[in-house]
Image 1 (tube, rainbow, N blue to C red):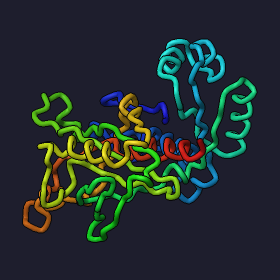
Image 2 (image 1 turned 120 degrees about the vertical axis):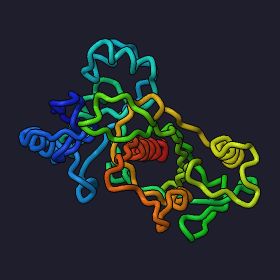
Image 3 (image 1 turned 90 degrees about the vertical axis):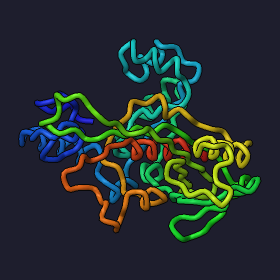
Length: 294
C-alpha cells in the first residue's frame, strides 16, 4: 500500500488511475506515477505471483513486547496483534527477501510459514444456485452442476462484505441519500483441491424448497453447519479494515434482478460500486494454504 493520497478527499490512493477511486477528483500526474511504481513493486500481477512468497507467522502465546520486537511494530499495534493472537500475514515479496526475513523471524523463535502467492490467489468456483441434502451440497456454477461432500471440506472461511457507491467530486459535500446493503461470503476449502467453492447468500438461487430458515444467510449457515460440522470455521476476516475495489460482474441470480437485456441496465452516469470481495478472497486463499500445511 502506497502512502500517496488524494489532494481532494485525503484518502490513500492504492490504484494507479487518473481519478480518485473514492471521490472522483483528478489525481496529479506525480501521484498516479508514484502509485504505478508502488504497484509494480508490490503486486507484479498473476504472471509473476508464483515467484513471490507470503510470510505467515503464528502469534499465539507471544507477549506485546515480543511481537513489537520480532515484527518491528510500534507498541500499540503490537498490543492489538498480541491480544488477537493466531495466524498473521506478516509480509509479501520476492523469494530472496522473504527467505531472509523468514530466517530472521525463525531465529527469534517464531513459527513461520512460506506460502506461494499464486496459491493464495487461486480464483474460487462461484456457486450460483443449488440445494442441500444432508452431508452433500448439489450446486451449480452457471449451468454446470457439481457436488460437494461434507467429508471433503477441510476449512470454512466466512466474512462480511462491505459495499458502497463510489462518490463523485461534485457530490462529496452532499449528505448521502442511499446506501448499499452489506453482504457476506462463505468459502469451502478442500485438502486435495486448491480452488474453493464460494457461496454468496445474496446472489444464490435456492432449490424448490426455498429458504426454510426464512433468510438466505441463515439458511446457508445451517447448510454449512450440517455439511461440515467437523471442519474449523475461520471468521477472522471481520477484524480487518475493508480494502475496497471495483466490484466484479454478477455471476448468479442477481443478474436477472438488474434488468440485463430488458432496458433497465444501469445508466452511464450511475455510481460505480466498490466492495472488499477481492480482499476476502485473498485472505481466504492464504488461510486455506496454511491449513493444508498443518
